Amino acid sequence: MSVEKDPETGQVSGFEPPWFYAAEENSLEEGKLLHVEPGGRNVLLLKAEGEIHAFINLCPHARCPMDRGTLKEFILTCICHGRKFDVRTGECLNDSLQLKRYDWKIEGGKVGIKIE
Ligand code: FES
Image (cartoon, rainbow, N blue to C red; front, side, top):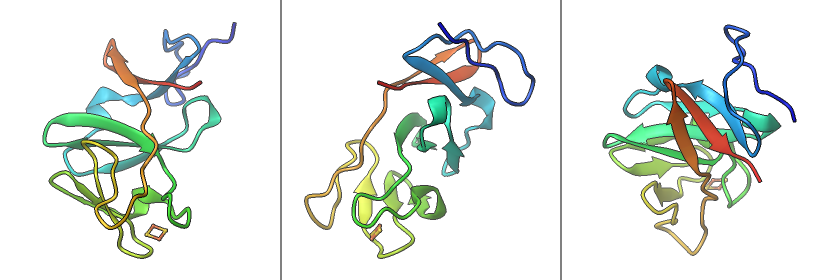
C-alpha cells in the first residue's frame, strides 16, 4: 500500500488509496481554479458559493484545460470555445456534455480526492 506525501512539506498526508492528497484546504479560495494531480490524475479543484468541487481538468468538448477558464458564482466557462458548466451538477449549459466529477473529502485541513 502506497502512502501519499504532501508535495510541499514532504509529510505523509494520511490518505490511503483510493484517496489521494490533492491540496491544503486553505489553498482553496472562492472563484480560484486550482490544478492538482492526486494520484497522477489531472484534476480541477475549486470553491464556488462556499462549496468545494472536484472535476477532471479537461473540457469534454475538445480537452482544453479547465483551470485556464473562469469561474463566476457557480458557472465555469472554458477558455477555448466558451462552453459553460454548472459546477453544482457538472452539466454543460450549451449542449449535453458533462464534466466528470470526483469525490473529495477533508482530513486535518487537507483535501483528498478519490481516484478509482
Ligand atoms: S474545449 Fe472547452 S469549449 Fe471547446
